[in-house]
Image (cartoon, rainbow, N blue to C red; front, side, top):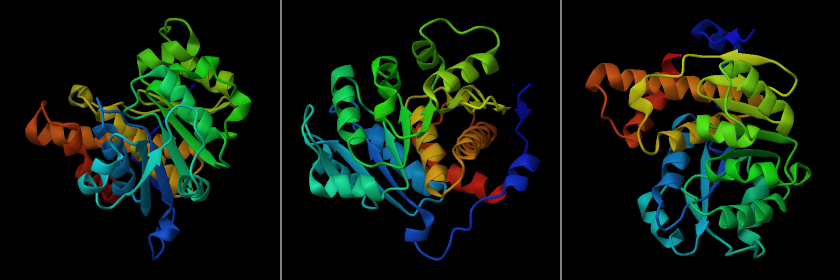
Length: 274
């Protein structure tokens, strides 16, 4: 049976001590973006900062990278190599010094996503979070090339791609199967599973979260908590909880129709109220 996620459970777990500087709060690098979806990496990056991470970098295709710095002055910006090209020294250093790397938001081409994942996996990354198109290519990607500390943030369609079948009625069992198959902590619609068989279940939030970019905010929140040094499963639970409660706060205040970027300041409020 899944363990139910409650505010009491989260308070018992607690949050890591934020420390006195941005360096002590963890560094995130978000890898993704495309000319069609340049905003996804911005949503994920800001979400990571909003839940407490200290620094964030964005690695994006050269066609959009110059435009991201003015849109998010808090982020360092790096050019992602085209195709399977090698990482430059600056990006490799950022990836290898990051406490958590998120790959996937904004990618819209399987081949480009696969090439980016191969390039990034070649760096010595300690903790990797995969989202969006990165999940679609994972069944055919060599698991041994990825870090042992792997988190997957999947929606229901992506969960079916990972399982290579339709979901059953027992969501907890399906998510646990994904966790075992990919040796990863998995978050899917409020359910979090560890490959050792432990499962947690939280309320996933209301229908207002079904808006463009909401998943990018969620993946950024999970990655931000992961960069703070939490165990992967706790980062996934905290990220899912915070995203859902942020949506609940907005629904109560303004109703359905808010934008994904409206969630961002709510993340901080939820963390400080929890």
